[in-house]
Length: 148
Image (cartoon, rainbow, N blue to C red; front, top):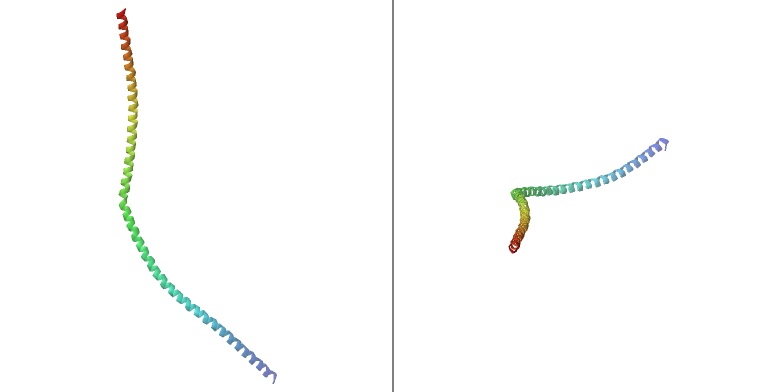
């Protein structure tokens, strides 16, 4: 074998080794791509299921919100009807407060009048006693003058 043939043989063996290495790498890459494809398919299925669940959940939530809005409108309407009741209760409270003030004023006037009446009664008693004492003194003077 000549040097050229040996060089060609080495090149052929190197080329064959390179082809075998590339085939092994391509097989491994093919496996990885196959696994990635399976993962992507499972992810797509999961996303599809989640989308369907989310759609049904969204419909349920929308129905619940509509019912909540209806209930809230009903409650607001009923509360609006109770406003006159609370206004009447407030007016009643003011009236009771005014009545209490009037009662206090009346009590103060009655108490003052009672004190004045008590004082007047005392003055009257003192006056009657003074008149009686004066009559007794006069009658004693008359008795003393008639006995003299």
